[in-house]
Amino acid sequence: MRPSAPYLCETGRVRVSAKSDYALRALIELAVRPDGDPVSAEELGRLQDIPHGFLQAILADLRRAGVVQSQRGQSGGWRMARAASDVSVADVIRAVDGPLVSVHGERPEAVSYRGAAEALQHVWIAARSSLREVCEEVTIQGLAEGRLPDAVAARTSEEDAWQPH
Image (cartoon, rainbow, N blue to C red):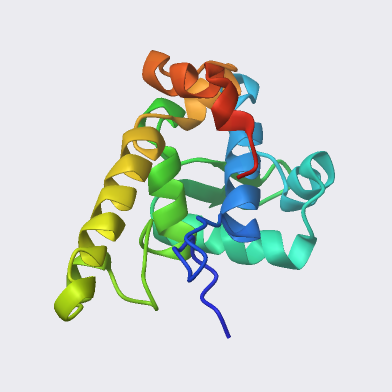
């Protein structure tokens, strides 16, 4: 079975898991709530079309990472435990899926290659660095406000960025 975390696979494609995608969408919903009002898991799931059981597991991971907190009672639900401006996309991915990049389940600095393939480790390290440049700069607050850091927005303005190759 393949790991669910984003990873570089044999084809060299980076994959973002459904778990990370759902976690980010749920957190954006929490971030847009006035005064940080709690939201039930049922409401979060309905608003973002996230399966309830899957969302419960994601919220538990985010709670363990200190990103969200739950409130019991009639007006209970989930809310941000930290300011949305202090939570990056990278924080969320790591909370629900582990490292941003892994190679066969290992961190890039832990893999080694022999002979002619030795330089391949540097490709994986560079790929992780590139992902960090984007994912550590984008915050939940920025996403909730529909704004990206200039350097990230610039990457999406290039026509080639939208090509599926």
